[in-house]
Amino acid sequence: AAMGTAIYTNDPSRVNEVKEIYKKSIELGGNNAPYYILYPYFSMLLNDLHKDKIEPDVVLGEKDLLQKIVDHNAEDPKYGEKYKAVMEQITNKFENDPRIQRLN
Image 1 (cartoon, helix red, strand yellow):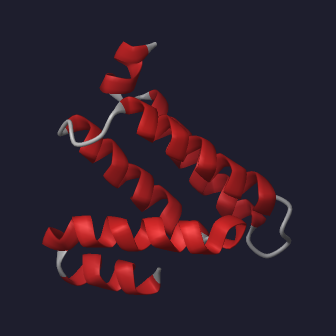
Image 2: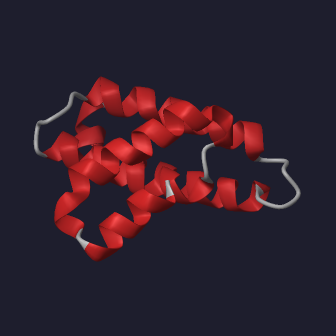
């Protein structure tokens, strides 16, 4: 996960590679996926949605998955608040996204 962040910081044109690194980190980490990749990963998915690279149901499914990760970690004494704050950002971005709003 940290590698994906470093790549994106140094070369934003590699966004697809970074998205795949984040996706794999979430798959492998499951409920232990780091909070700091959840929002960038979700933002990349929304960008793909706007470019018609993925369908809305993919975004909805991934949002549900991220919510489960956050729910699992919400009471963690060290990182719980960070997970909850990230999910709030994801929810706000999701609810304010014009393409998602058209689906409702």
